[in-house]
Amino acid sequence: MKKNSIKNNRINGEFQKEIGLIIQNGIKDPRISGMTSVVDAEVTPDLKYCTVYISVLGDQESLDSTMEGLKAAAGFIRRELAHRINLRYTPELIFKSDASIEYGVTMTHLIEDVIEADQQKKAEADARITKTIDDLIKEAKDRVPFGALTVGICGHVRPDGDCIGTCMGLYHYLKQFEGIKLRVYLDHFKDQFLNVIPESDAILSEYDGEHLDVLFVLDCSSVNDHRVGIIDDPLNAADYLICIDHHVSNEGFADFDHIRPDASSASEVLFELLDPEKINANVAQCLMTGVVHDTGVFKHSNTSAKTLEVASVLKAKGADLSQIVNETYFMKSFVQNRISGVAYAKAELFAGGRGIISALTEEDMKKEGATPTDLDGIVDVLRSTEGVECAVFLYQLPGDTEEYKVSLRSNHELDVSVIAASYGGGGHVRAAGFSLKKGLEEAFVEVVRVINEALD
Ligand code: 5GP
Image (cartoon, rainbow, N blue to C red; front, side, top):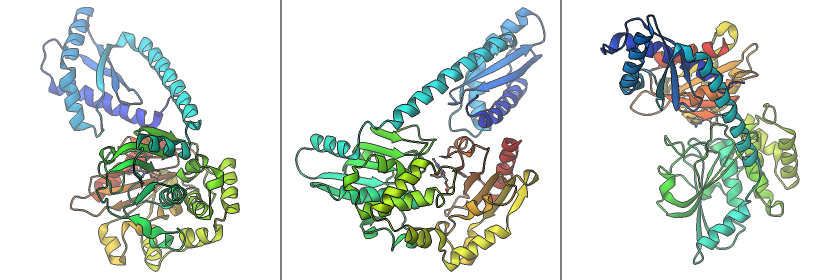
C-alpha cells in the first residue's frame, strides 16, 4: 500500500500542474521544445524528491535537448515551485522521459516498500523499552556527578489533559528521587484541572532561563515552530533531551526518543517506562487524567486492551477516575458552553454530509468572554454528527497577523495526520491539527477543498 497516499495524490497533482505551467510560461531555453508536456509527477512521502515525467512530441533529438534544458533549469523551476506551493520543503526535481515511466513507477514502488519496511522496523524498535526513566536518571547522574541534577519537564503549547497529566505524572514520579532539582514548564494550566492534578502550583508558566542537565519533552511531536510551550529553544536549554511521545508525526528529535504511535496517550507511554513500585497515588492520578483525555473517556479507537490494563493499574494505585472524568472532561464552564453553542450553530456540512466544518473568530470569542483554552471538545462533538467522516474546527489565534488553528478529526477512514503534516502540523490518524496564516474565508475555502479531495 502506498504511504501518505492522500497527501501525495494532492501534492503530485499540484506539482504536475505547476511544473507544466512554469515550463510553458516561465522558461526561455531554446533547447526546450514547445511541445513538452508533464505527464506525471511523483513526490516521495518524505517530500525530498519529485520525479517529473516528461513527454515531447517530436524526434529523439528534440527529446534529448529538452531533457538537457530541463535539467539545467531544475533549480529555477524548484524556486518557482517554492513560491507557488505551500510546503515546508520543496523537493529536488528529477526529470525523466516518458519512456521511463514504467521503470520509474516500479522503482518508486520498490523504494516505497523499502521505506515501509524501514518504518515498520523503526516502530518495532521504538516499541521496545531500551531504557526506563530510572535508567535515564541514573545515566544523567553519572554525567553530572557533583551537585543536584537539574531536570526540566515540558510539553506542547496549549497543553491538553494528556500533556498536563504526563508532565505532572513524571514530576510526581521524579520527586521520589534524591538529588534532583525539578522544574515543570507549561504555558497554560486550565482551571478545570486544579482540584484534580496534585501540586499544580509547582508548574512554571514562564521559562526561568535555568540551564537544565536534562529536559523531558513530553507529548510533543516536534521542537520546531514553537511547538514546545514556553521554551523557545529546547535544544539549547538543556544538555540532554528526552522525548516521550505517541504522535505518529513525531520523527524523533531528542538524544533519547521513545515514541509509540500505537499508544493511546503520552501518559500510557510514560507508564510503561516507570517502575510500578514507584507509581504512587499522585502519579496514578496524573497519568489517568492523560489517558482519560486522549481516549475521550475510553471511547476513541485508540483505546486498546493495553490502555484498559494501564487504567486498571492506575485505578488500583489510587487514581480517582470519577473525579477526573466529571471535573475535567464533562464539566464545562458557562462560557465554554456558550462558545460551544456558537460553534455548533455555525457548523456547515460539506462533501455530501461526510464533512462538517465550523469556525470561530476572535470577535466571536470576545463576545462570549472566551479564549482558545475554552474550545476543547468542540471538534469532537462535531465529529459525532451522524454521517460525518471528517470534522474540521477552525479558531482564530490571538495576535496581530491573521492566523487560524485547524483541528481535524476523522471517524473511520481518513488519515488526518497526513493532511495536517502537509501543512507543517501533526498529530494522529484520527486527530490532528495545524495552523494556517490566512484570513477566515481563504482558510475555510482551502480546508474544505482539501478535505473534499481527501474524502473523494
Ligand atoms: P487538537 O486538534 O486537539 O488541537 O490536536 C489534535 C492532535 O494533533 C494533538 O495530538 C496535537 O498534539 C496535534 N496537533 C495539533 N496541532 C498541531 C500542530 O500545529 N503541530 C503538530 N505537530 N501537532 C499538532
